[in-house]
Image 1 (cartoon, rainbow, N blue to C red):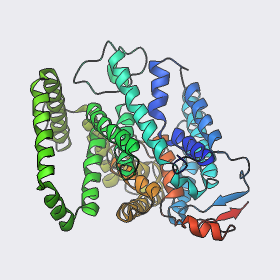
Image 2: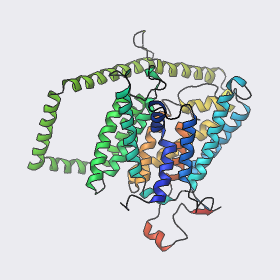
Image 3: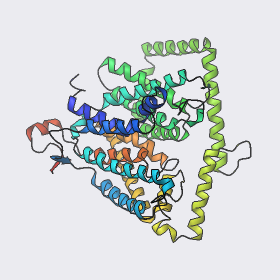
Length: 447
């Protein structure tokens, strides 16, 4: 137990988890259980997460270095964004939209507080984070399944999500947060499979299977695309000719052939007796293939009245608006057209048309650096925290081109965690015990 639990570090990572990955549970408790309506419950939960990150003995006494290259680029980006937010903002002093301005102001303040607290969290948290991710991603998936089972308006084939309100408007949920939760559950469980504890292996395997099911049920195309993209990276770094050869040798051992045959016939028998399950799987496959085909046809301009994907059509239309500015008044892209000028659902381009070339350059370069460090972490595989963050970042890297907005909490809480823990060097504990004053190569800086 001591290997995976330390009260201080486990508590701090639980706080970090609540802030940057807690949305699935927050939505469930708000909408399904009715525990705290409106935004008050969300704010209270985020404050709880921030409080859990605080260590009274270390607060403001020492700070640890983040990944400085991406940190500097994030500072440049945020500086440009805040200048636009305060001075080139259509919501500023607009009484009808003052709530939007206030919401974003609170978001930016929360980014600052969250990052300051992240800088006070020791690198030693890397040894205690994994059980928390596995347990709470499992809980998030269970909450989703429960919400589906208790929603009388849910129909088989519909995108799985905790719906907002009374459940009568089934399309009002946000399946993407549960798809990301499942994405994290798959790769965190994979890392825990390397643990020697049989109990943790079984729990991780169960969480991996449940997460895969949820990933399919949510039908979040961008997250599924991210998953396939990440699996290609996983196979590239983990599968070689030697591993394939060893796998074939292992498969053709008599005892393994017997187990494989037993497993195969067991699956065939189970499917043959579960006609309803087969029809559900077939239905979800048909729904996904139809919606994916519609998205491709719409994106390529080959759609007709029956094959329009309105989500993809929205991106096509906003991309057309971006091209119009690019070709008719390209000088507007130097400083940008103004904060939240155009919601594109393509974050990497939205930051350019809104806030100009400096914001676009810093945002793009920051993500390029994080992408490179994620690949490095996945390749090395020596640190479970950075390996997990490397896999998890791929989910956000792909969606930079497919959905969301560049200012939102869905991105920036994650970016701040990446900047703090990804790309820095970690010293072994044996060295830490010999030199108490230099606890890690991401050194503490006296306040």
